[in-house]
Length: 165
Image (cartoon, rainbow, N blue to C red):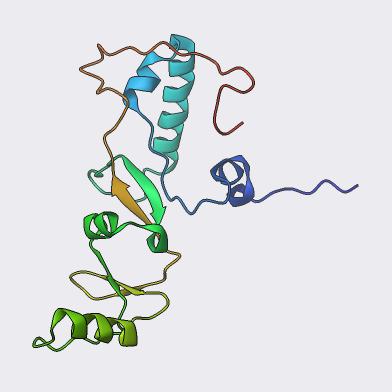
């Protein structure tokens, strides 16, 4: 069998990201500082090598990182839609007349309600595909590094310990 050489963009990092569309890998400083010194030395050497290899590429001064959970728009609750700044339109842009009684309003809703809503971003009105993935903020479970004082003991998982096994 011929020796097929991979292009770097098809290499181990691409495979490690799997099928995600992630553009970044965010690493917890607390967890990295909790790793053994030998591991930290290898990690820092790789980070330095990466920085040196791309010194010529202009990069942002800083990034904003926020812990979040990923959800599909059509599966969001009303509260989650509001939190994500998304509006569900069940009536194809129609609005009921203001003078309707409660009975008439219910009849109007039954007449105009669609089988599935259309989703719009509040603010710019951009329509969202119902299968779009959005991020909802959650508290970060990993403690702040506290100037290098926070330590979490590393522990290798045994078979069946992790959810992704």
